[in-house]
Image (cartoon, rainbow over all chains, first blue to last red; front, side):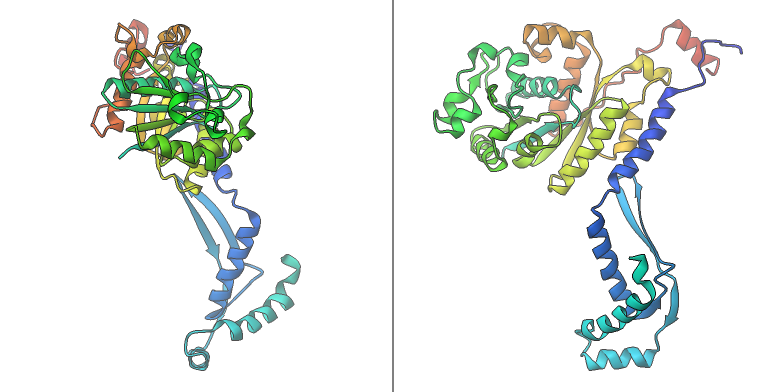
Length: 117
Length: 265
């Protein structure tokens, strides 16, 4: 080595990479109940339009700079027929889809996904 | 329109109180009226760093208890017109005050002063919540060390959750020679990790300790020191002036490190 005093092991880089990890972890610590409630609500909305595979879906939080982003990976099993959607919309005047759909969601949720909750 | 700013860090011992005292003095030197609130109940030190400890008569607790008027509790700095301190009680703990009470005091002071600087205690418990309850802005003090940066990030998150969104950063105790040798995170590294705008960079300097020994804010000293310049610059930036950051790396490098640079070290 030409310059023996030159230390390749830069402790600064250690500090930075360790901090990056731990900060991302710290920032992602949203209350798990809140996360669960949010997941259910998002699923409710999505399930009005498509049938989601609840066993394969993934919700995750990731961090970049001061932005925390929520990534939802929702594999679609089946897209609802247009006619079916329109009928639902008509029946509810497009305002309150909640009631009809909640029944449907509960059915799929309970029968297929109850253990993973 | 006065501004209520909390000086906070999460971790203890990074220089909150030193920053508060120097910034208060620097702002007062720029002809601003400044009220400093020591929110570190039970462990007050702001009076000591300002050299006002012997003149403390009443504290914030006495004001809240109605034992004196707010104006009576304020200790006026004789060296600087417009600088006053509201001391914390030393014989009580942080639970002695509630956020609403702190808010009341700060808003009352805001009527008479341009700046209200609140010296926050370390930690994120009630003392912290008291200190930030009235703040519209926050100055985060951190050092380029892992624990300080991590805690700063946590505190920034908590402030944002409380709706304090005007947050800027002071990186304290930078050691240019260590940064040079990649043995300490640079200011840029810290900024990248924390993602909040920079407000000031203060190098490590023995004069800081000397000044605290005497109870005299650096910016009052006869001789211009680098940290004193740094604090004056932060005060100017708070005032909205565009001041370039001190280039701490400029005088860096002895013959060896310069040679190393030349030879691609």
